[in-house]
Image (cartoon, rainbow, N blue to C red; front, side, top):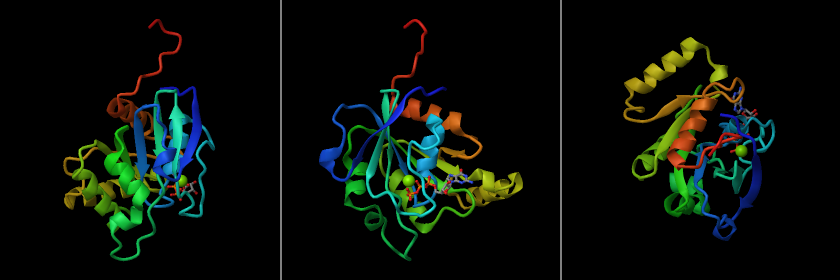
Length: 203
Ligand SMILES: Nc1nc2c(ncn2[C@@H]2O[C@H](COP(=O)(O)OP(=O)(O)OP(=O)(O)O)[C@@H](O)[C@H]2O)c(=O)[nH]1
Ligand SMILES: [Mg+2]
């Protein structure tokens, strides 16, 4: 699917900043530096729409990107590098927690996990949280380009053996190669119910 328009709309720092036009929203969650902003850029095929950084923890706001005037991708602040035993609630912060629990326009959540090391304790806490809430979610294993096929296979075997993925939707992804991009976009449109682009074709 080709995305023709995507633009940054607002960096929300409190509830009053959230868009009020009712478009469906899909949020990207995951620890700092996991690749949330890079995933957005890859989805919309722009090199630097969402600001990426090799310094983790930069984004402390809900960054809204409007895609095709049909939906918002919401880039959430990354939760910290795990300080042992830190609670998910604290790691997410009040704004994000409230957004995930109460935002009516939020239709689905994409949880990113580093394919090389994850899931961390906070990733697992986040997965548990997602399972207990009604909104659909997708686990995206990103930075896949940093693993060999064999390493990824082994990773997947471990996760399967541990039962981590049982019954869950997941997708291998790389912002560098674009692997998984079409599938992620398809999932987003499907779960958000957003109107699909229809260029030039008769309605
Ligand atoms: N090789 C590789 N590098 C990636 C990939 N995705 C992201 N990166 C790199 O990982 C670093 C962090 O990426 P970001 O997209 O800024 O991560 P983020 O999750 O938005 O981070 P915060 O905004 O701090 O929470 C950057 O240096 C990216 O270039 C990927 O799929 N493959
Ligand atoms: Mg980011």
